[in-house]
Image (tube, rainbow, N blue to C red; front, side, top):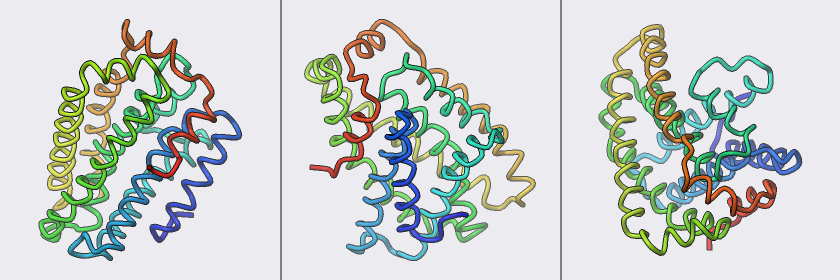
Length: 248
């Protein structure tokens, strides 16, 4: 049953995290990150960071339900989106580092789900009124990145050493990537907003294939990825708990 409130989303995410800890599933990495992001948006609503709190909660719930339904479909053997299938399939492999698991989950959720959620929360001409709050959501999410980055460094001495060497460049690269993702998601929402649902489905299908190509880049190996992986903490449950811990 879909979540109907932001608190309902958080409860569903907590259930997923608990299940992934019990089963040592790497799917818990993205769920833990997503819960933290949802809590940050909830806190933003509480302190009046948005022009329209009710609209942002509706967007957040619609956005989250698109992720939550993928898990239900995957467990039932009914998930068809190639990009989300890629993310779920990656979780079965020990070859990828934690950061890759996070990014390959973020990929379809931002590339596809965020634009769809925005267009369906504010269809047609209503979308323009969402622009400022949409940007605020992204600013709140970006503010979490230094905390998450520090936690990832705690899971891998190699990643920590790399950050010491190229920290400012990495931070700028993350910011630029998130800004491009936000802009791309907004443009996708603008393309979908005036369309009927059947017409949207065709656009979503094409976007799914594009996102899969980006997922291939995210999951690519190499000497540095291999070095990080060999020295990264291999306890999946402990890694999930680290990502799920309250931000310092």
